[in-house]
Image 1 (cartoon, rainbow, N blue to C red):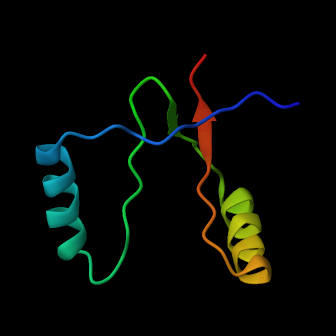
Image 2 (image 1 turned 180 degrees about the vertical axis):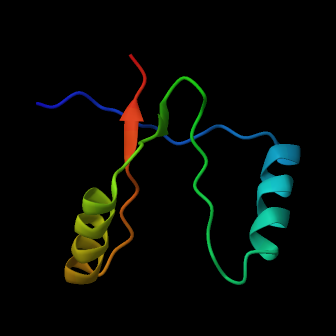
Length: 70
């Protein structure tokens, strides 16, 4: 079984309010929040980005590339 690389963040009421406030300024886009000890954004080249965009279109879902913290 693969290792679990993410969990839901546990936000305080204030953190949740700030996240929702930021989302409200994003024109309907959603933000994902990960704890600092969970994942970091993956650095992708143009080819990898294109592969992810194609996968998103094929699957009809959003795909987020992250690197697990070790």
